[in-house]
Length: 195
Length: 109
Image (cartoon, rainbow over all chains, first blue to last red; front, side, top):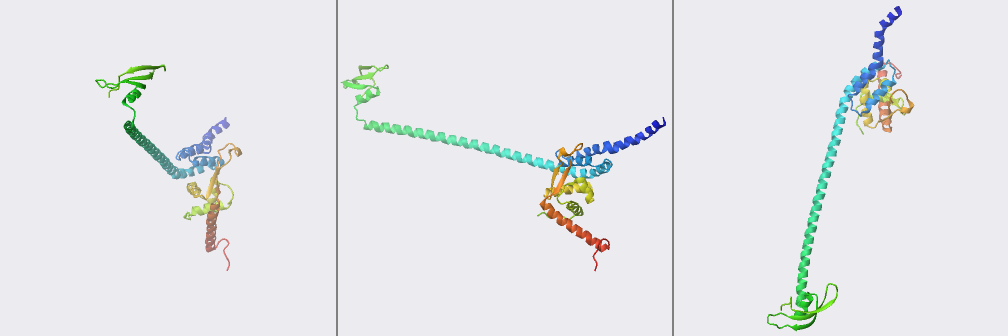
């Protein structure tokens, strides 16, 4: 019984020793390391150092780290935050520049498209003008008779002029044309060719 | 070239590092050898790392068991050159101070 009583008497001292040399150093050091940024190498470094030294030295060493952590931790946090902000700002600036360049590229494409459309319109207009001029020139140079021209416009060949001198100014011609199925027909007509 | 203030702490760390210029140095062991508090020594080691006088690395986890790996520091060529000069000057300074106090080796004549 007395042995048990002695044991009870030393129990608080044992628990205290367990706390000071066993549990507390690691726990307190981990709390202190929270002052450092999450990815800081010092966190792992100080933990590695703690468990490499003898248990007797640990409490004093951890107490010493309060100074280290208070001095270094917040400073490194601020530095890490600034670095992160700088990276974010650089990324934002880069994104803005990329967006601006993309906008510029779209504007350039639109301008190029507009210019191409206008050039095409101009070319088409010029072509039409040229075609009209060519037609006029051809007409001026056309040596065919009015009857031949009228037959040509109808897609037919003049065979004979039946009457080119009626009272109303119509010309009656005999011509040959192809039907839709390709068979030639011969007919006389006075339509579509007023002199 | 970085203009470095020759503080007492730097001299002590330089002397401790130059005890084994080619070896690996651990933070706790270095602090003990230099006689410096952690609050002074670790920020100093960080500065020396940033300036390229030291490199660092981690113990191989395969070689240890039951504890996390420790970080080690090694001198670079530039570090050996600059901190070697600092350690040399610090030793010479200490020798002269001892001689003035009349203790230690001293010089006759």
